[in-house]
Amino acid sequence: MRVAIGYNWFETAAGYHLERAFRALGHEVTYVGLGVTGRPGYTEVAAIDAIIAEFPAAAEFYLWIDPAGHYFPDGIESLPIPSACYLIDVHLGHWREEVARFFDVVFVAQKDFVSRIRRIVNHDQVYWLPLAAADDVIMTTKLPAR
Image 1: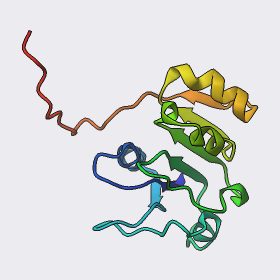
Image 2 (image 1 turned 90 degrees about the horizontal axis):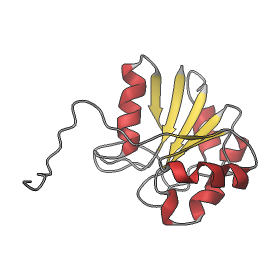
Image 3 (image 1 turned 60 degrees about the vertical axis):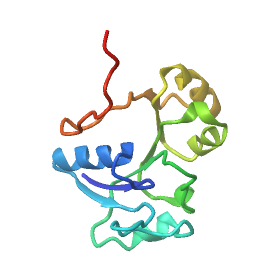
Image 4 (image 1 turned 180 degrees about the vertical axis):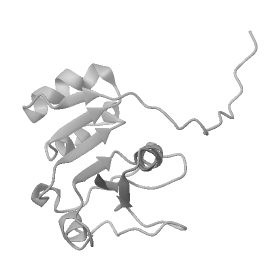
């Protein structure tokens, strides 16, 4: 599958782990998030529908991942392909509830918010997707001795 994935990139971002997971499963992934030092991307004002329309091979799916900051590109409502979002910090403010309305499928990191988001978006395509990380991510925080 050809996946377009948008989020605010940084090395420990959940989106980066998902991007790597899609690639490990053999999917073709194109990053369409914000450009940052060391990672080409797009500006906050770049329209996602126009970006995806210019791909040499058409994307089959768009995934927007709740970032640090408020990256939400224009044109999502005009995408001709299925779209999904992964709301990680839905418990931290109501703007993510509004964002959810733009997507065909919604994933949330907090299980307690599934029914609430279903009511808000008025469809049942809302699922709990707990946070995870790749096997090669090393925990550097030391737990207190017991």
